[in-house]
Amino acid sequence: MKKLIVLLFLVNCTLLAQDMKLIGEAAPGRLVFCKADNVLWAYLNDKQLDTGDDDVFVFGFDRNDTGEYLLKVKFNDGKVVLKKFVLPEREFKVQRIKMQQKFVTPPQEEDERIKRESNILREARKTIGEIKGPLYNVGFIRPVEGGWISGVFGSQRILNGVPKNVHNGMDIAAVAGTPVYAMTDGVVVLAADDFYYSGNFILLDHGQGLNSMYLHLSKKDVKAGDKVKKGDKIGEIGSTGRVTGDHLHWGVQWYNKRVDPADLLKIRL
Image (tube, rainbow, N blue to C red; front, side):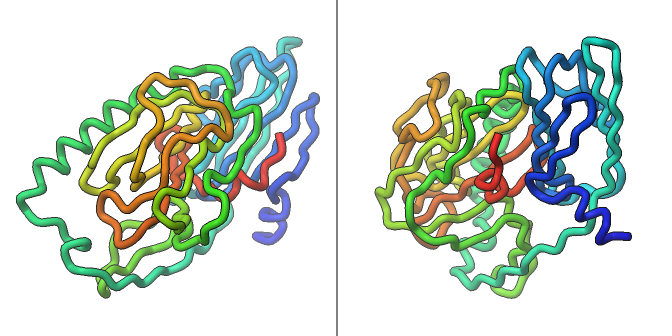
């Protein structure tokens, strides 16, 4: 039965009901895009989704989400479509890393700085969702050309033998100064300098709750409020923040739900 459920929600599956098409996979850490005309409103369980006036909207599931979800879509002609999702189990890799102890446990004197920076990011993220249109409708690209994948989404990180938080993005290693590009159209919410963990980083809002982050930059080419297009250069790879080498940490979320950036490269809207 479990295999049957998984097959129902493979990437790029097409479900037709009242001219509604779902693209993506209903699974932990994944996104689903819905293409439909003349939608009046849509809910995922009790959360109303931003459908706007366009023909596409998005919803997603956190890395740790489990259980059943009900998608309810009402069209302008009064018809209602219900779709039930049962999230399958998903296995994630374990990544063992050895590093200097100062990178594992921050010194106590940095506690206030870390708390202050956390509050800055928390306040910035409160604006996610204010952009109602799907700026991402132009599609997605990998934010770095070349390089190699040095860290994958969702992996449990064991630092010097001690289990730590899961990895919430994709790491792309490349030489310092390698250009970093916007994965799709968006607006710069935050362009931060020298955070303890993230270094120099950029937070982009792509509309309807979809957002992305680009961490550990050596250089930033944008500022808060700037509008960017897919493929625009927004910065350069570096090793700022709590890292052991030059790389980009590319993170993607739907509101506060952590999703796998690699999935976006498979999506064709």
